Amino acid sequence: MTKETREKILSLREGGMGYQTIAREVGESRDAVRYICKSRVHPVEVQRKVNEMLK
Image (tube, rainbow, N blue to C red; front, side, top):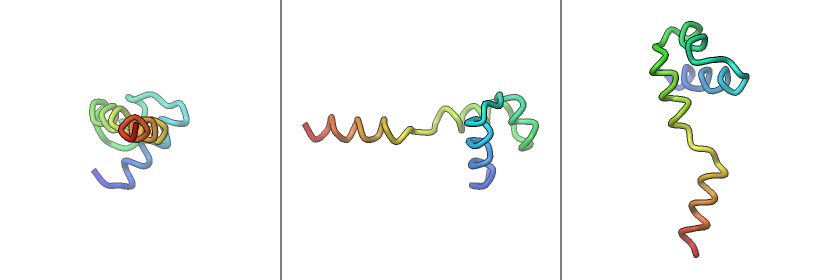
């Protein structure tokens, strides 16, 4: 899967589109789309974890 496809998946998901609809749009499986969306780490979570480590 290309970087552009991953970015499109995340953009569509942020726009409120469902996994199956995104999968059809980009030509990937629903599970692949779900994996990309779930594996994304939110910057706030990263900062919280860094702060915890620095304590």
